[in-house]
Image (cartoon, rainbow, N blue to C red):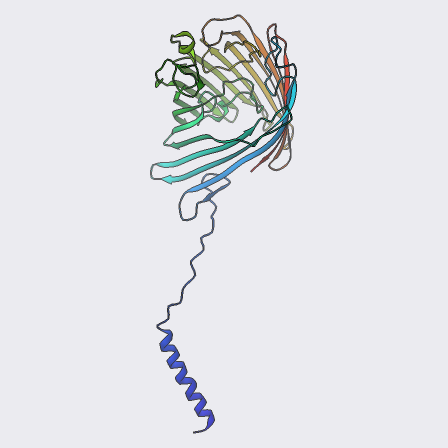
Length: 394
């Protein structure tokens, strides 16, 4: 046997033995990597939570601003300013993070929504603190129902977007903004929309005189809800709507008067989109209050003393979209016959306010906004206030 034959035989024998032993070895396989996938079922920004069929969108913004107002806070004849501290300038900051979770079920879309928000009002005295954070909203949507904590249907219903809020500005002027616990149901059909909501009006003084969201007015918890209804119609031209609300017990009334007083409010409104002018529109809103209820518009009270809601109010606002980067709006609101606080007694006093809002977006998701407001009640001095804000959206 020559050397070549010996080498070939040895190699063959080694291969047979190695192969037999290899059959007994378990080789670990790498785990498959599951990448985040885009979920396009609910619009931009949603993605699938890995390992589930649930879609999540994370959004929000952060802003910094400087604001101020004319007058002085101890002036008893001054109408309270809409923005900023009277007679001073200060800075404020806010951040907001929204978590929007949705999935499809055999009955329809199941949605959950949480908003975290931190606000720092700053100080005109030259010091600042860390920004406190809280859960600003939390609710779920299913089968047309909305259950949880959010804005009242009086200002923000899950249906009929044009019927929400007040003027075109960020502040919106006075339109009755509040956040409440609520159960609401909404529908849309062939341009028609509507909603009905039962809302917990649990704010004010309790039986011991402590202010807070206790729901206690006379030593008992108020479980009877307020009721808000909305009906309207929308199309490419704009929208028209009507709202009504019943306040079963005016905030704080039992504590101060040892009695019960209810009231109701109504609103009619329209938004007209300007033909061949995308983004430009006119809004007209009318309000009525039978007493100083939790609904209506709120009001520009003066610094010391004050009035409640007005019996009547009219708000007119126009927005002009000058370009894809620049928008402006003007607004005017008139208040007729303010009520005494927490009562149905009319004072005969009237008031009005005007505003100017300018918005510039130099690059995507970055906004520079300035708003200026003038408020006045009858014989009281008028106040001018405003802010300059820089916002980064995401």
